[in-house]
Image 1 (cartoon, rainbow, N blue to C red):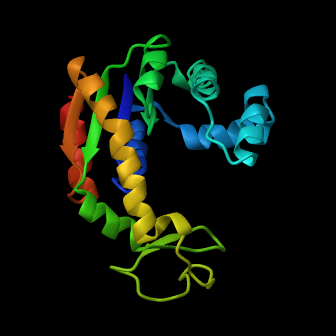
Image 2 (image 1 turned 90 degrees about the vertical axis):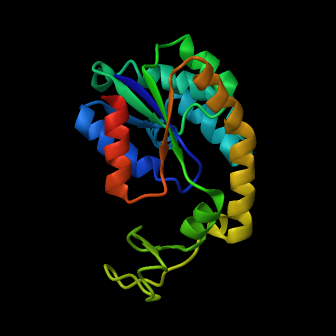
Image 3 (image 1 turned 120 degrees about the vertical axis):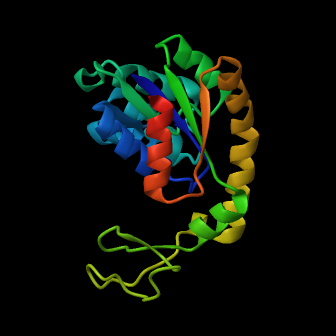
Length: 205
């Protein structure tokens, strides 16, 4: 099975992708993780991406598509894979369609007002990388390693609102693209994690 998960920042794509990929016994592919791995391993694509990122520019589609092409040829993708947050544009979707045939696209929908609360309430630990939320954790230090928690710059409310506007502008055409191909299923992401997982599993069945 070859799947794509779409959803705005804070919708829970990563959490759901891990669960569904494990249940379906397929590879979970996050382009962000993939990009970091290519750079860490010093591949030709990774070095090209590193130079672009260090200049403060966005990694162009041809580099991302090159990485995706390499990734889906790995042995763990033989039984299928799940893309988490890719493609991001119609151009990337077109390029992906030339590489493989997608079986289903899951769009995790959450009201933007809820997403601002979810993301802006997030606090990170600089020591061990743990994440907390002010709605259920009010201490200023990590309960795992004791480091002082902080809020990422891109988690501040104003920045989150801008990220969501950019996402909407980029991704609505992508949602329409997959809907027109009868591949899209939208699930309600404003539920418990378990309820969202159950809804996605039912859609895939």
